[in-house]
Structures are given as structure tokens and as C-alpha cells.
Amino acid sequence: MTTNRIGTVTLTIDGMTCGHCVQAVSKALAAVPGVTVRSVAVGSAVIEAADGWAAGKAVAALEEAGYPAKAVSDAADPVSPTQAKGGGGCCGGSKNAMPGDGLGAKSSGGCCR
Image (tube, rainbow, N blue to C red; front, top):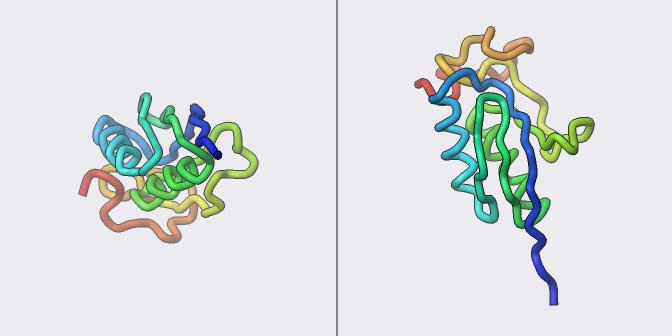
């Protein structure tokens, strides 16, 4: 018999600048099976994840939404090994929204389309 262990995971999230970003991140996290959202603030989120797979899926969901993220406990080795992209984030995807060279920046940004 195996059991899933529920653990609290703190995520650091780049590209968040406003309340719309908080809403977009909350929505993206809530859609991930096995993840319960405890809190979301500009730049971070606290979730409960059924296992490492669910935490990795949460990071992937945020990256797809335009918000590069990583688990704080894995700061040197992120849950998702994708590289942070320039641009993205909120309010039109300005290349100044996040540090980087603008490669892979979305033309319309994260939440404010």
C-alpha cells in the first residue's frame, strides 16, 4: 500500500507585478491536479502538493502562463529545468518586465492581454 504525502511548497515566481498577476497565477495553480493553493502574493505562492510530480506540474503551469517559477527549497535546482524567459509577466509583455535578453518573450504578456 502506498500513500501520497502532502507537503507544503513555497514557490518564487518571476514576472508578477500586480493584482491581475496574482489572479492569473492563482488560476493557473488551481487548475493543477494534486495542488491546493494556500496563498499567492506578488512574487511567491505557497501550495500544498500531493507529491513532487504535482509540484513540478505547478511550476510547469506557471511557466506556460508566462511566469517562470521555482521551488524555494530547490533554488539551485528548480523543479522544472526550463530557462527563465525575457518578457512575459504582466501588462503587455514588456521586455523590461523581467531581466533577460527578450528571447521567447510573449507579445501579449501574462495576464493583461
